Amino acid sequence: MNDTITAAFVRQFHDSWILDAQQRESRLQATVHDSGSITGSSFTANKLGATEANDVTNRLGDTVWTNQDHSTRIALMQDKDWSTPVDSFDVPKLLAQPNGAYMQNGIAALNRKKDSVIYAGLIGAALARTEEEGPYTTVVLPSSQKILSGGQGMTKAKLLIAKKRFRQNEADEHNGKQLYMLFDGEMLEDLLSDTTLTSADFMAVKMLQSGDISGKWLGFTWIPYEALLTVGNTRTTAAYTKDALHFGIGMNRTIDVGPRRDKKNATQIYAQESYGGVRVAEDEVVTIEFDA
Image (cartoon, rainbow, N blue to C red; front, side, top):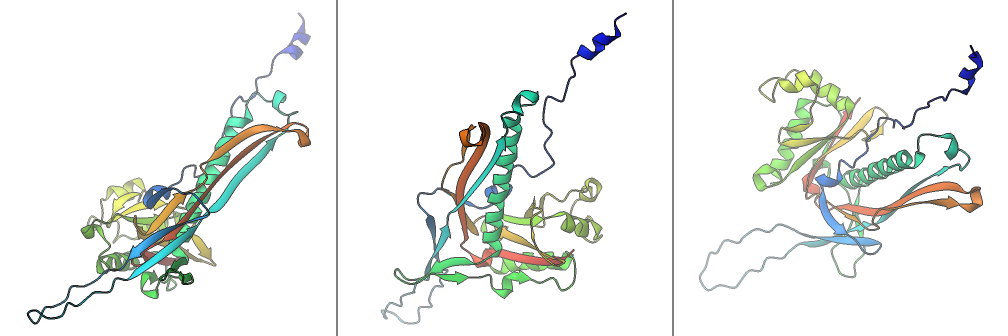
């Protein structure tokens, strides 16, 4: 018997890559207004304010004109890219081809960056001007659209105040608006721990049974998002309508795989794109702070 033949046995190594758990698709892009393909370094969104009709108290009197409140918002396009090298000496040693898995990682990273631009646009300042040659000014969310932490986690009371704001602003489902609410793991824990929320009076009991709050309840479509702004123990989520923010894509996603001759012919995987977003309606966004 020749026992040494075992030394020549082929060793099967893993022939595929298992990607770390991560958000791979953009979750927020479909929840905001699509401005389409953008040419240039920025794009604008025009806003027309609401008006009221006049009471007519005399016949054949002077016409009373109503002044229209116009403003223009501007979204600056932001360039994003992702790149990684694959050493040419490593490729023959691998049964698993790195290009596909690495590229998936890069696309996932760009999709998450896209969501961060949308989220920042919802809760941050927007650029606006009201005159053709006037300067751009920054517009922040008014205090009436912000629900502060108050040293508490996410509570039923905060959700009801948010819902109230949208109704008062005529920005809810009764006016044809689509409402969205972002939530993370901390919010999930708070909400599932609140027995008044998980009772049949507020939502289906199966929500607690499944441990899932995604879907639609309280008039909001709930979107999971784990990158909420966190300052100390306080996090900030956003509730908003689909019309609240305009989002556009400038440079369509470009992916290039090729050799880097200056790096010993290492294969470089490179992806790039650009996009921008701007909030156009402060009364259609409510931020909610909660302590973790």
